[in-house]
Length: 474
Image 1: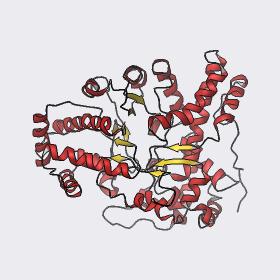
Image 2: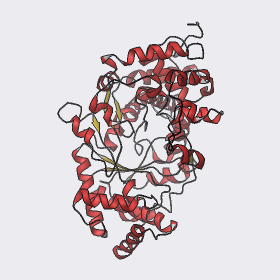
Image 3: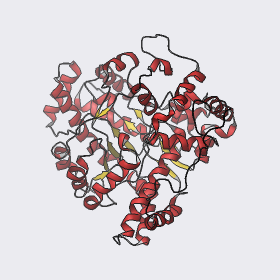
Image 4: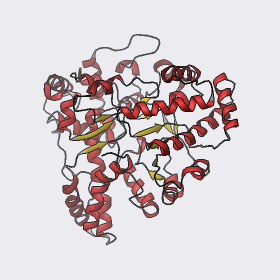
């Protein structure tokens, strides 16, 4: 193996360059860096923890599930087929995992300055103990070293949960999921560490080609008449209860916009019937999604589940890629999202309920100071989720804190969640958030806007306290 650049992680990474502020950030970070990780929203596979089998190899673990990785490579002209991404039409793609890893390593320089570089270097250094930087020359060393470790007992998923100091991790499943993997965890001691989240998009998004079939299946699962509006709502309540039996404390809603509605029951029934029949217009299917956000808020008030709203992603922007490879292939793009008018129907009905927990996320940073912070700074039911997806980055986190804190404060935010499929990167992602929060707080201390004792208390809350409170975790 050619010896190249050492792989090192600077202890002051992401801290301010100013010595005075950096020293404060260091002291704050030392107090919270080893707190347990609470990961209340993400997309790891519950099968991993249920079966507790070793992961296969470096490529299928670190590259193929990570759209952050292959979207960057694709942007530089590398075909997804070369990276082993399966095509919907069954056309052959690269299956030599070592070759795929070599392609990744040869182009690793593309990730300079990105959060992916921070996360991956942390995984390579802290999890796998690699001492040289990834490059074309070290690709085989990386591939062989990672694979040799992955077969060990200490690299099984449950062992890694313990090693990573993950107190809780929530997966996300559709309303029709049988939750068999979560059921398998019962009695293992991990059923309280790995919980599910109820995501009903499959049965509330009438733009889906399988919407009517999914609603029919919802009826079969629950014994309710889901061809009627009251029966449909009753079925959703039953599924929420089923998810709660498997640990769920939250719901998640990935709608294109933040539109909400509060229709009279007769109008909601008629709209539902048009959606079932496939005769609803695009405006009507959007209105139906909006009505369902309000219905779900009402159900959350009944059963106590925290409600997460993730709007504003233009999904599958690249139609060619979608047709060849399907969704979640790196072609989702942030889009403008309006909250003040769109959320008003829901907030007029439920926004003043202090016992309701609604967490708002956005990909539209222009709304932070103008819309989201003032809304969350007023309505008792609202809290702000952390910088999300494209903005889950050092600069994105700083922009979030700078733009929302003066109006919403810290206590109308909910700490950090990693929202990832990349299990091995979870410690790195949380460490980045902890460092950035300490950096931001240190600036306030240096400017005499907070005492250091107040900043230390806030660092704890932003790392651990607020997330447990917002997601109602014991």
